[in-house]
Image (cartoon, rainbow, N blue to C red; front, side, top):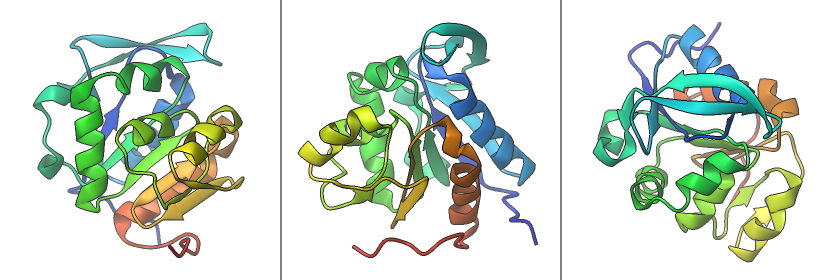
Length: 189
């Protein structure tokens, strides 16, 4: 039986430079499961997407500002990657506070590729088992995370994945965690 996320609201926090497939595919999986997704950002209008960090890949409309968002209004948070996107988010105080508050709420937070950079800035990775794109694994270790090389890792309410190659497993894990079911054994911490 497919997960039913009707009535669930999921925030996707992104900025210019977001890797298109890392926003698009989780959003499609959540929408198919019945969730209502909203793109939050640091500015109004549209955000510029990229393919492989460099090639322009269209835009996404922004549904709301992270500065005006409340964790209480959402059931989960998705942090897509791309190199530029999380680099912009981790220097924005409202974004960092929103991510920190979300993780501390215990609600599911999913980050893929370079997305965990924002988790590092929020100070929420110490003692957690995570995965990411290889180039930021040292950053995660230096921030106190236990880093593994797996397609998807679920540690309590944190769901992390390495790259677009892992999107199928990442999307399944997000939907499953929001629905309250498990697609894999959680990491014991």
